[in-house]
Length: 426
Image (cartoon, rainbow, N blue to C red):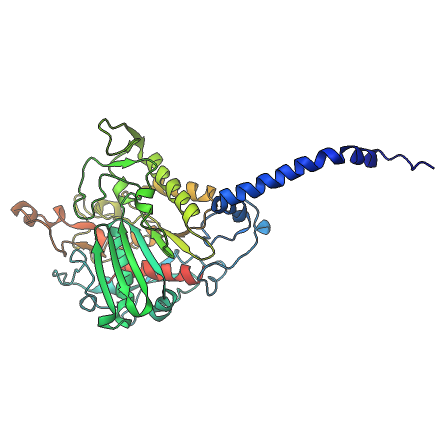
């Protein structure tokens, strides 16, 4: 007796011999791609199920679709609903400053304000207090144990170098004098904690990409040029690092346009195009994210990006007299909505857009708003001057006051408290 006819079973029997070769070919292709492009393959498919440590970055997939995984170095998590970057400055003459300027020999003379005659000390006694929660206290012992056998690196410009030095100052007193050292090799400065087999490093790359300002000593170039697609020029020095802290902003602020080199700096005839600052900056952000995706294992490493550091060169911004700056400023800005004209919101928007579209796990350290209140914390005129001041400058201190960099100890210690909080309690 013939079996009853079923269209679906008939179709399946008819196509079965033809289906297997295609399935075999498909599986073979997937296997081949996974072997050939192993790291990229895992980045493309594995990231769909990874929890990223940055609460600032929005997920493109619904939260319920994300598989939660342990974030590297995390000991816990920030209190629910707590934004550690939103808060106020409170007076604290008990736990601040976190170290004395004279106790940290690693601070560059451009940042030693007390040594260079700054008369007031109040700027050192302010502590950042988030709304509705507390920052975990910086634990130097925990940090050093975490870094045992590892490399930590700050990459960027002189502002990131200031944060790097602050970080070293927060740790070095726990290390015996004969068990630590700091050496500089061209663009790379390395602090070594010998007993911990750990290094904390700074790498000079003000644009992250290759540029004509890459000399760590002689880099005051007025006509700045950045080479497109060149992050590996510097990135080869970052490979193998366990904790990376990037920054780049100030050096892009040369005007409304930026010169971009399409070829090589070695080319006799150089092909240079001009892009808007925002487009050029976005190009660098995308290059950084791609480098991180290809070179950093999110299960073992952490990557941070520090937002723009504000300047205070125009006192008219906060209601002061025209022609003034941070010079002689000893109090903070108390307007919680203050945003200075030197901090380009359009660049901040570029960061948000690029990071939001990316699946790369980078923790965003949003120090811009909290730092914008601190017009009192800059080095101003209290620093080493690299060239003799003219009589005209001496007669007008505003003309040479540094309203970009920050005294140490001071504001940048707070940046590292926030870094500590996001490292251990993302």
